[in-house]
Image (cartoon, rainbow, N blue to C red; front, top):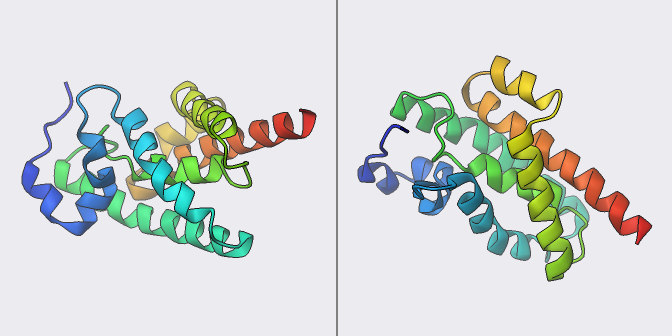
Length: 158
């Protein structure tokens, strides 16, 4: 069983973000719910130019290293399931340059979740060996990158 998250943590902006605005509190599949919570923000990101999108995702990654590390420390658990900011950033990477229609968004979502759960090489190795906020973030960034590559190849093929 996962370490319970004290509700008071949600009153702190750092933890509120790392817990995906509360989406990570889902008792079942918090990563999936965190990924779903990232979708509305992705639709807003679509309004940005490509360079600005990249800047925002890099900034969200850097912020995530900090906030996820802080929440992990507060909970006393390295990568607590409720910490889902890494899913936000991973999904935004997966959906970079994706057409904003439900088919491609749904496929990108599914591919990201597949790679995040499956953790093919080197994701599994990094997940086990890298600690702190960077360790929490890096596996989802790579899962997002894998999903991005597959999604873009499928889009070019179709």
